[in-house]
Image (cartoon, rainbow, N blue to C red; front, side, top):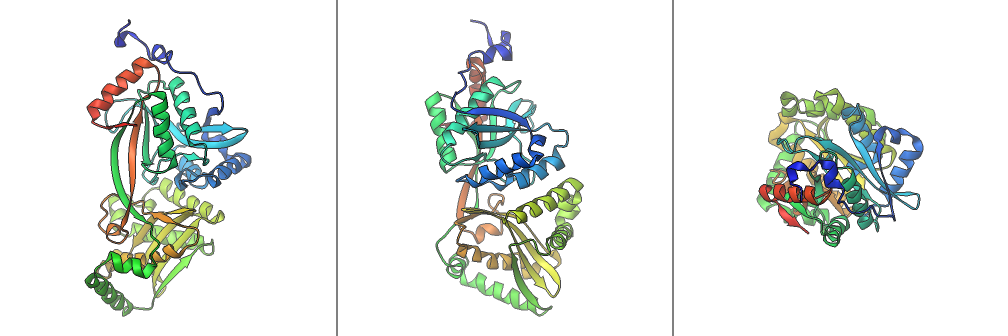
Length: 385
């Protein structure tokens, strides 16, 4: 038998299994989805998902691609069944893997995308994974494996992924796992707040609220439409940029691309009734602001900012106290914080956790898969399924 070194990547792919006939898979230039009929199909798919991901919906992902991938290096992998779109995920070939020179086919992510899960029509989860893996087997290029970043480790999509790996005898590995704050409870907002924070901490927050009120009229506002959206958006960008993120150059307004993404995404979410804005006002100045995406049955706490000059009054925490009213929303059962694991603020208020992981999956022919198993073993990942 030929040695691994003597085989080309094309040779490795000759042993790949045949593509399933029940679905149609395609890799498309994302710019093709600028057309209204394509966006309508995309929106229809988003409405059929059991596990929503706003960062891969048309109103968010297209502005992100326009801003961050103007040359079109990212492609949209789509799965169709019976003429309907049943799955979509952005993919790109990368030459480096977390700083190492290891080429791979991977989900496209960026600094303002907080979930990499594909959009999949409920009931078609297994068909999506079979279609993606079969396509990747034949189009791996120089990629040694398929890498899926920031995917939930619970739910129908993950269960179907493990099922398909098992039935195909395909090796996979969980290479990173973390848990981030999640709000999911049947308790009332008041009961939840009292269970989350000690009496001493709640008393301190009341004191901070009172002291802040002495500086002016303090009021809370929740908005779920597009009234005054342009002005509100610019106020948020300015507030975030006024703090440490602006100094570090990591604020949305620090770069034209991210500011443009933010403006377009909020407008798109508002048009579809998926935007919620929360503001804590001191007289006519916002001292804390929060953007959430409402994607029933869940929601995503996307971006927050507060006036750091008033940090001693904890305006961000005061805003989160008001945000617990989300527990009474009739169409939202949970809200993902989108925060880093062990976040020093939200972890103390939201008690539930959502497990998020990075997965690597074997693709291609037998020898390519054998090479991936060696890489996965060296990386120390947890084998799947």
